[in-house]
Image (cartoon, rainbow, N blue to C red; front, side, top):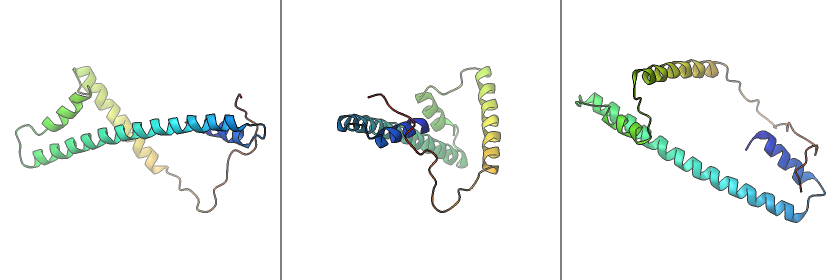
Length: 132
């Protein structure tokens, strides 16, 4: 959900003209959204754990001199259709990796620390309305 959608919901809840049935409908929608988000998170965690396990096994196999240490990683990538198929794909992937590395380095340099203390709300009032 976007920040704007949250602001719309806050405004809808604060509106005195909002009926109990409308609130129940919003609550059901939010519960459904939460359930879908939790499922997506569980799936992503599973993918991450499998990829991390394959990466660790690859490094371990390389450290003991296994004949093909990339087997674990190749298998996991192939499971999700992520193996590069030709030279152009390889070059694009390497280029994307370099760009991502540079972007992350830049972001880490410019991280702004949040001030401690009370958080100020950015959106106040009931200027936005949801349809009834």
